[in-house]
Length: 466
Image (tube, rainbow, N blue to C red; front, side, top):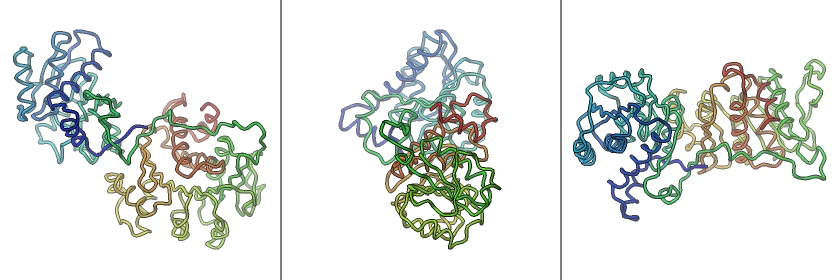
């Protein structure tokens, strides 16, 4: 896991006061980190254009030009005159070396955006919008200095935002880079150290970024075991039984010893796979429950009360968020909620936390996840999206490894099955959500077909390759 921060200016200030590192020295390390990346990934003498603004982000870009000068064909493109103290200093240094500048974009191999950094708010002028549109249309490899110009501190993006292939971000990871809206602009992300190791530069934080190698699979180390040793997941089977069946097949594949669909249909009419069981009541040896996927109106309020008349771990999804019983379930512990944005907006309204649109939620995902978890500290919330957010009480995690491959009906049912399987096997609610989410996104990554062809069956079949 890696730490995430709302801002890093306070971390820079800490470096000045505690470690006696100057602003100039931190900037030199920022430029050196970017230069090392370029030298390590591109051939000498390739053409580099660095687009520079008036502040310290521009100063980073000017310093980079100095370090690449004579090794690469480097040009500075000033879209604003240097204004900050560091920008003026770096310009003086570049001028002394006769680093050339240009007045408009030319064809190049590498294009570096150093116009504005994390302090940007509002919108660009029409002139700068036009510049950014030209930059985005260029065929060069695009590097953002710290963050893409146009990405704001809250993660929202300006009308025109630089579309980076990679963001070389300074000191530590910024939470703003992982709002869903930012995903099309930041590209790959690498952290540049600023003269001290990250573990020294960084301070404790409540937000973490998940790495794929954080995934802990439910491997079976116990040799003296039977099917009951690995839990029994009960899944509510409602009107759209296919959703529950997909969850059930997933759970069985992901290590649950037993999986039973619970509903009121005739078992024969469901054409169940032979590996799954069906019952009208929750089996007595059930160790976790999954409910909501394709539920519809199959269960009455009384029947739902009977289903949940226990203290078993729960994973709740989809239709259950529309049911009155959700108010009762939120009082429990050891539960995982997995809404998509529309369902989360409904849930926020239902519990009188916020009356907002999906658009407002997507622009403020971090804010509303924190609000919900503060109000319901015993529940684990997994908010689906391009970057999944998982929260419990004051601990928050972002899984950035998802892709548009998963934008397909049934993908969420597979996720519920993964979480349910881990709950049934004894994982805590938080760990079940974290590791199931990582497994879910990794399944999409290891799929070798075209990005539009992934189906829930493909995800289920891929579990064995994790």
